[in-house]
Image 1 (tube, rainbow, N blue to C red):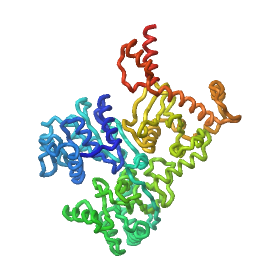
Image 2: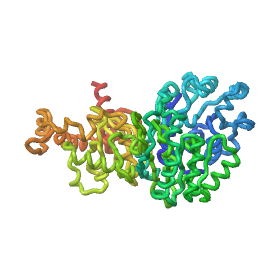
Image 3: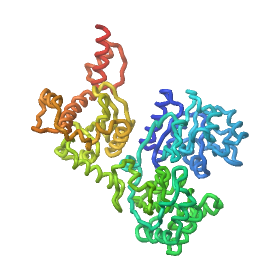
Length: 572
């Protein structure tokens, strides 16, 4: 039995909540290494329904069976793949898309009454694909409220531009790589750029990425392969590494270059004999090999937390592919401080290639050579702080915790009691509230009369901040929440000055809009914080005895005031 991580239970709760609100097709996005399959197992266990789990690779199917069986009885699980057919009658059918797409197998499954379908690596699922036909015929694509389809992916987007929105209604839960690193669920990543003499300027683009045949000619050269091997010896010697290559021949040639340099390496590829691949992967896991070279094999379904170096010998324009390749090294492992990403930078010409800093998901973050992702993010946030004028001076609180928010590029307001607040728009705020044992994250209106949890768990501060900022970046106007917004440098408006005077808030002559906003926001946050305190005994008594309404013990003062005001207005 596994112990769920907080975000896994949050994701399950989000799926169930959205289902109650009418959602029938939702997508969950978590970075590689954050346990999407155990999350699926928790959802299966929670619903207790007949379930179809679809995957497109042998490794994914085997892993799904192993991980789901940690949560639900193994006897309930069966496989439907090639000649294995016990999944046809099992309560939980873990199936290969290729096998289920066969008419005979699909007809057999149509006799079942699956109520839950889970699609692993769902970025492969698009309209009019095998996935679409299978799930349509099983009743999951028509909005049936009795059925729930959940997609799982670390990269919920496609390079070819085909929209996942045609398949899924919306993303119901997601966490960024940075948020998971801040929360301690993924290790930090450190990038080193190594320039090569390979020229990609004449390589064409096909399906949104570099044309494989032309790319192979450009980068699979003895000089470049030797440079990759030498770079491993210089920067990553002693680390277990995976090298990503353009094609099968490149994988073999690069493995030869490693071995010629005295580095134990082997290639793995899709058509490799299964026993040979199993033996090679076993040798890598037992430290008999230093490096695995591969082409399109280890990007999905390969879980080895001991990997601490990624060698990007294959340049790409695909953010999805780049993230998948790097993500192989982000899992936590004892004695592993970080994952080293060796990014071999060719002469790109007209092409815009993915780079290490793109992993942060924020175009303002650029990583220096040898700098880690968290270091780069912290430096960028510190630079924003030093340039910005218009944020509250929070250093006076003398707190290391407050410094965490001070480094953020967003405008946070600290509130007495150890709470933090940030605006989403004119009517809503996100709160990181201190409670016994940690912090909770809430979305609340500006009157404190309505709130909903962005996390149902008690979290450490860094992870709570990451959840809050992920939500704000996705839902708030950038000009409102950014410390860099140019309007913050303008002189304070008459309305701001009037409000400062009305609330008797001291201010300096020549105060800027940003500085005035910070002072006003601090006062508003204090007032809202008071409304988010637990309802008083008098309020609870009045609601129970005079209005006759049963409410939760977690009712806030603001919510109680709203209920009482609405009741009195009805009487009047």
